[in-house]
Length: 344
Ligand SMILES: Nc1nc2c([nH]c(=O)n2[C@@H]2O[C@H](COP(=O)(O)OP(=O)(O)OP(=O)(O)O)[C@@H](O)[C@H]2O)c(=O)[nH]1
Ligand SMILES: [Mg+2]
Image (cartoon, rainbow, N blue to C red; front, side, top):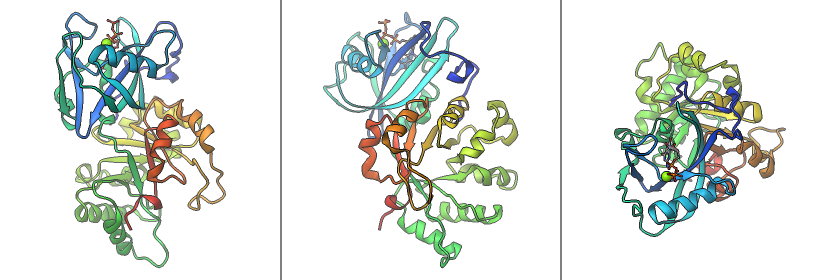
């Protein structure tokens, strides 16, 4: 969901995040199954007379997470127990530049209650678009729809026909999964067939198509828009795009899609920030048999790169669903993978 506006000021535009004029704000998107908590923002406040996610300014002595914990206690009287680092949104309002440190809060103690008489309400995460938020908030709406798990198709083995490969994925992919349909050997028409087959056999899945295939398919197959949820760019695809304008103009892909990009280094993360990808897959955490000869980054290097991303980061490369807690500890958002993610 490319939501970039000229007011968004990613690091690459020359804005220094440590510049004293940037107001750092910790913001909590509190999620309980499909419900998200929103609060009314009084008309007297900056960007008031709208809904907001609770939070406030980070004080000089605090980390964003400490500020989040303090603000959520002060504003809605809850104790944050688990907060996942999700996004950093730099935005130039006419009056000031803010950096919103967005956390997804999944565990807390206490019953949320407006401590400044502000109205609060739980709304369905699919219906957030019906409410008006401060201008900087647009990328939060797609973020709350992102899954914890991002599943990638297995490679088609030599003894398998395409139909057998599709059948296998139809039978083994978990319910409601987001499935990246990765198949480098198919030409555009077979790839289209594969997407059609999977979306009819498993309408519950959210299919992510290869960006390189979609560029060719798009003019030929208008229904593609509704068959897939998003596209996945390789690091190479990502680095070949010069700027946002080029991305939208050249390929004319719908802005309602989710854009995922593979990243392996700091330059590609920087590019994903600039192009406002919805999420990145940072790999490989560990060496794997699918990418023989490629060394793993290891958690320490992975965490350092992850910290440079302004968009949600999935860990990929020798990762299993059980690693989600460790990924959150390292500042990541979700887990991605191949073998470990299927049902037997
Ligand atoms: N809390 C919050 N602030 C937001 C959001 N989106 C957004 O642009 N902001 C901006 O972030 C800035 C700081 O937020 P705030 O007004 O909550 O700060 P605060 O709780 O420390 O308030 P205070 O300075 O009155 O004590 C404001 O300029 C506000 O417009 C949002 O969703 N939640
Ligand atoms: Mg506040």
